[in-house]
Image 1 (spheres, rainbow, N blue to C red):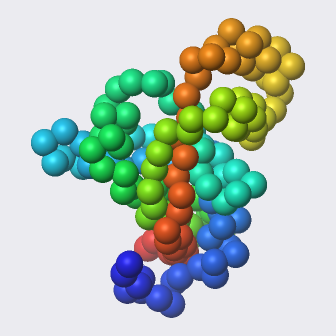
Image 2 (tube, helix red, strand yellow; image 1 turned 30 degrees about the vertical axis):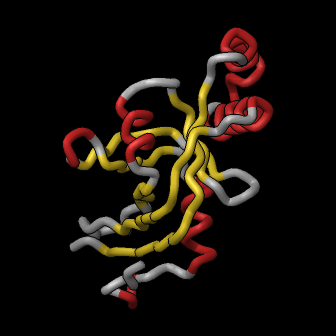
Length: 158
């Protein structure tokens, strides 16, 4: 894998992982139809194992793409607060290169679906998500990204 060109802006690995774990929205990029890149915004969760879990349907463009090529790029951007009297943004971005696969183990899927729901909408756990989980327990799907390289960058855009 390539090293970051602007290495002075590179985040420490622990900081990059913190941004990744705290976030819940990213862009999953795969090799799509006819060799075109396919980037799609997704909700995600970093599991206890350090893998990235994405809730999905069992069919569609993402699934077709990962069956052809399991290499992916996953990008997360964390905006920082603006500083007083400064129009420029401070941004942390994370890029993950890795391999993606469908999760087959139903217990892992159900555990991570609830963890994802709790991560994004903790206030709705007792109502919507419990009922939805029971209704869809046999059909809900999940993707797993096994990271190969995680790189973080801090930028002060001017």
